[in-house]
Length: 266
Image 1 (tube, rainbow, N blue to C red):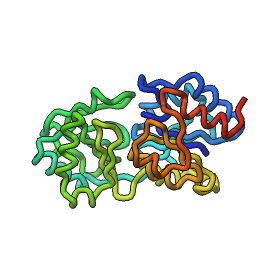
Image 2 (spheres, rainbow, N blue to C red):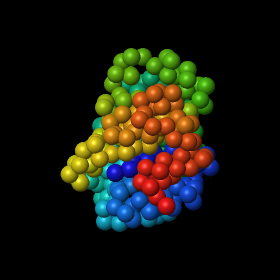
Image 3 (tube, one colour):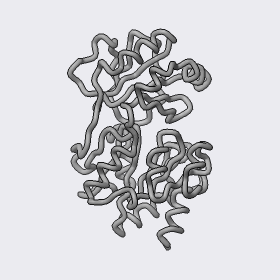
């Protein structure tokens, strides 16, 4: 199984899949290798990429919401799902209020831009198809299951927010900086590894059957667990330090060039 992060990994800087990457991924997929996109987004937001790669067959799945939801691509039914309750976000909402920070909370279908806080940039930053609704924290349903929360802010302001974040918050969530302007708050111990473990188990496999590609903090788990963890040249120092292999950057077909060599693609 080949697991692929999107931004900064499979996607170029202009958010496209290069023709070389597309061709090589289609070829190994046709030869029986499981190709699995791993993202913080919902499946509808990345559907054009799945169609481009032909990942719409009976055995095709996607890791979404950074591991909290594994989706069977061709009918979009869940294989695995793990969410949080509204009450789990109360400390984060109070912190955002204290620091005049924005906050978005996602269930598995839409994004709630929390209207009683600073307006968020997340809808403008978000690339893909998902509903955004403006709602106060008090109006969020107690009975819904939520995937994660996001603080989306200018990178320098987000740096300040991270530095000021108390330990009680960082201990309560799995906090990852998925992009310079996006800080994600997941359930404790939730990351792409959780979803990949469920999917590998579904096929009767384990992490010895996994190759994973990534570039940033939210890829650390899958890179460290995979038999072959491949970091992008443009990846963070942290991700490159724990990887088995470093390939070329996302604008230079880094995914395709390594796969071509490893699988002897012609």
